[in-house]
Amino acid sequence: MKYLFSSLLLIISFSLSSQNDCDCSRNVEILNKTVQNLPVTRNTSDLSAYNIALSAADNYSYTGNYPEYDCFQQMSNLLVTLNDRHNMMYSEVGFDVEQSDTVYHEFPKFDGDLDSLKAKLDEIPLNEVQGIYSRDGFSIGVYASEQNLIVVNLSGGKKVWQQGEIIGRFLKYGNGRYLAAIGQFHDKKLVNFPLEINNGHISKLQLSKSNASQNRSRVEDSETYQYLKSGDITYLRIGSFSGYNPVLKNAETFYKSLEEKPVTKDLILDLRENGGGGDRNSDILYKYLRKSYKNANLYVLVNGTTVSNAEQFALRLKKFKNVTLLGSKTSGTIAYELGKTYDFPCYNFKGFFTFKGDKKYLEYESVGVQPDINLDNSEDWIQQTKKCIAKSN
Image 1: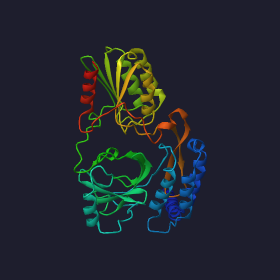
Image 2: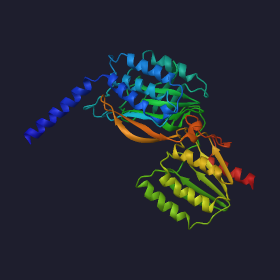
Image 3: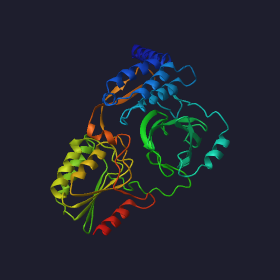
Image 4: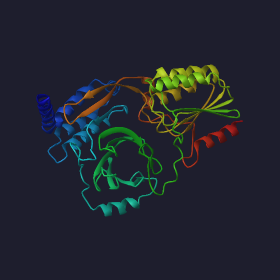
């Protein structure tokens, strides 16, 4: 046992030493080699923006106080130039609230007067993306810097974030869409994910401006699969198309139960906050709807958290006779399919990249699927849809 303990200490010591001696250029080199083999690269005729970002990452000096943070940001700069919102990176190491053995104890600090920044951001109009966003006592400031947005902690953070720490950046894809390159609020693990900012809300992070109207575009019920019937209207909530158990097993059971339900004249299919998955799941539902509801009136709810296979599914339903998409634009993370995880040599970074794509969805990538009817975020979306159904009848 004594020798085993000594060996473990040696392994841990070697691992920490390897991370401390890291050079981000090794990560950038691996990332570039990976990107060259991605389907999005083959589908892109102009890679000039990517090459400029690559040159900047290669020439960046990672000798400051926050080499891990800087490395993650430079690598994220490469990803955001690619028209493929599935690609992402993350770190396996985060902040230990007990402050024992953590790489990311501190992030960069805001270089300026925080009170002046607050006052400036507080005056920004609701419809602009810059400003102050809050939830549950946690408040962040979002301000423009060059082509992107900087995110700074103004207050709160539950012992994880210090006031004035730079949480990260929102990197512009365009069309009001961003790639978040931030530390997670609860543990500071560096992560990438797509998001949008609309009408004073960052829905993905459940953050809002103080003067924003109540955001009622989100699903209020947490059940992944739900069936309700009211008169001639059936409501189906489909919160995931995951092709893995236990979600897939639950989906199969739910879809099977629908065969015993009456077919109604109108169907509301709620795909909000459906993070996607695969055809192994969604094909079952598609076959059921084609058999039972192809000649009914389908009202499909989508929004910015309708992602990937759920976006594809909404488009597939357009082949039916009477289909209306309602809500707001989908995520625009639609044309590609995630593959395996890649390990980077430094800073415990991992990458999750696509391995194949479908060209028929390329026009929607980073743009999203536009609904036929836009719904008001300040009103309940189910009630608005029922009003649309009443008008149609």
